[in-house]
Length: 166
Image 1: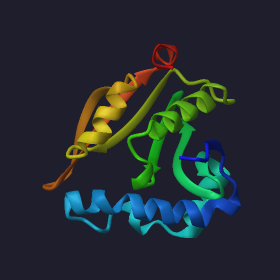
Image 2: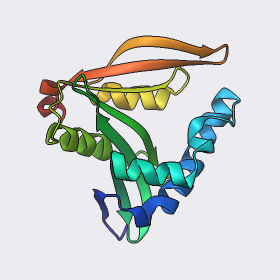
Image 3: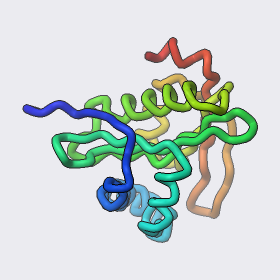
Image 4: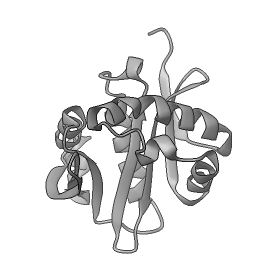
């Protein structure tokens, strides 16, 4: 590639770039489910800025360009929630999604709120996402029907599994 991809904690200056990347990345999900009103495509810049203050957000950069992002937080039950993983289409299938998820797991494990498990979800037709998460040690735990076109697959991984997938 010529340049190395680096990962770091996102700053407020990254908000617009993260939102543009999110919009680009979730187009394929919207097409897959026939729904362009999904939350990642309707999120506002102000809402994202609030998330940057209240949650953990990691970005992957290629030079100055944000080419990947993931968000996470620990809930009051000690579960690390991971979401909104997105990797620029031209950067997919190079291990960047795995790096971002593992990086978020590590941040949550080291956070103030102790976590005993990680949870995330994806759509039932998002086979690439399901393969990635299962490769990282996540196991399917639930299915939630959102509507006739979409069901969310919930996946979970106990914290002790972190070292096994590193």
